[in-house]
Length: 89
Image (tube, rainbow, N blue to C red; front, side):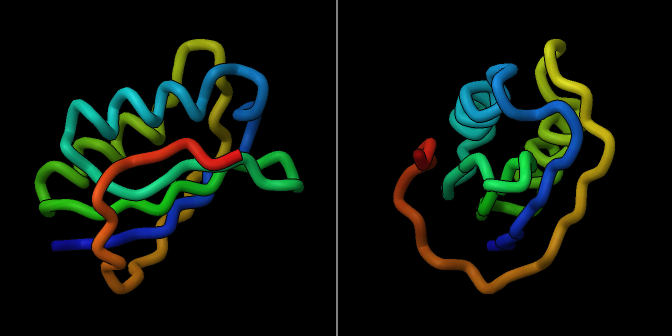
């Protein structure tokens, strides 16, 4: 089990980024959450099996077609044991 905290920067709010992330998390079986940050970035906390998480992170870095991702930073964290993936408001 691997867990990460991701910061996605660019034009990532108001373009469906959280819903996109939610859908791909469900596809990969990744648990955690996604939320908009006050500075205009999006934060993702995700955990899952290494291979599934890698695919998920690649898709997050691409973002939906309406987004313009300029930077993605990934920090390794301790797993929290999430039971689902949620959009936080």
